Length: 385
Image 1: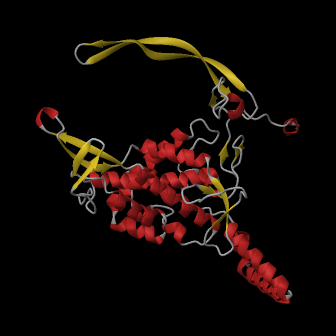
Image 2 (image 1 turned 45 degrees about the vertical axis):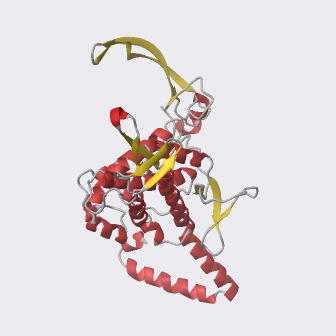
């Protein structure tokens, strides 16, 4: 199409081609026409979407201008314009959940690496409907919930505050306590995250959109699952004869650990015939997929640089020679071998506590071996001139 537009008379040729295409289609028999249009529909549904993502808000810092954020759909842009302070919170939250993603995958071939100045943030790897995509969508949704809920409780937003409607008495194994204080407003965080994060996927009726919506929901529910009760004691000399309690979110690391376990047990699915849900690909699977992360296609092995698949490869990655896990040199380097380099490392040692409030340490040098994956060997025929 672009070649025709860039050449003289391109529009006329395009029109002629369209006429000939239409004539040939009309000449097909009715069963063949049905097969033809079914093929076109499937092609439109399963063609990977190359577009920007709201995740890029995290890279904008304080420069969040709604009209200039690439990848926002109309509903997201309207929310952005009505709540610019919330967009700032979401941007800061994006940095947190991306950092958590990189922590969880630090020992994997794909290590949640981001692409500089790339509006898709993670590059083409997210075009695949893989386990990694399932995890990232769940983590990003959880990150928005956590960031907004935290901002509400800290009084940083005009539209919401902490939740102070829980009143009365309750009891646990330590006795009775009063509900009071200010609980984290998790319900508002979930409500806004659903409206903002799900906006793009709600516009599309295909397998990938259903997958994203499902995993987004799993991420939101993961944050709520780890709400915990916190209490403050009252009474003479800290006797704790009276307690005031409220509900608070757990550290985001707990959500990250939970979703990483869900990544390891993710379920492969296919879209059902009416396009409203999933069918589990594994015949022996029993149970519900409601709390499971789901994916549609298998992941690449991420061993080699593959721009089409979004893989950066593992050449130069540090590996653990003694490990049999994903961080081990055999697994990380995909059998290519590794290089050994001796380096000096400075660490704090012989630390002593000094009255009243300081710790003094010495700087100690040690020589350690660092192992890095060898690059992929070029085939001999590529070197022939």
